Image 1 (cartoon, rainbow, N blue to C red):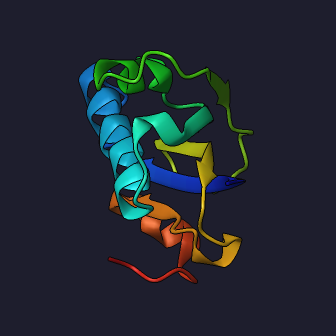
Image 2 (image 1 turned 45 degrees about the horizontal axis):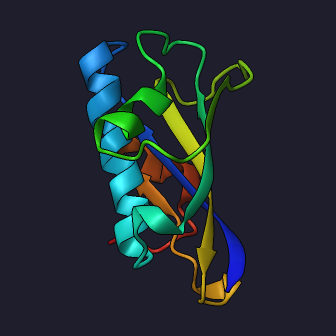
Length: 121
């Protein structure tokens, strides 16, 4: 079993607590589902948000979907002029038996524009 890092992002409609929770929960589930993983495969997740999202911690969203025994950390992205607004990003560290080249990174909602090089589902 190898340790793999999976990336993902989603764009949130508004700086609203429920919107952040909904979008983040959807992102976490999509990263696990698309890679054939379960909560037990998670080692940790690093979440970041753009500076315009402050209504809730993304880690709280992961807790609301039942992931309660995995370490999470939240941080703020740097405020790059012209960068996409209202984005939650994650880097999930997982135990997986697939090669790095088979990792499926997930970009949802408007965030798919951040990685146009990746295939869309």
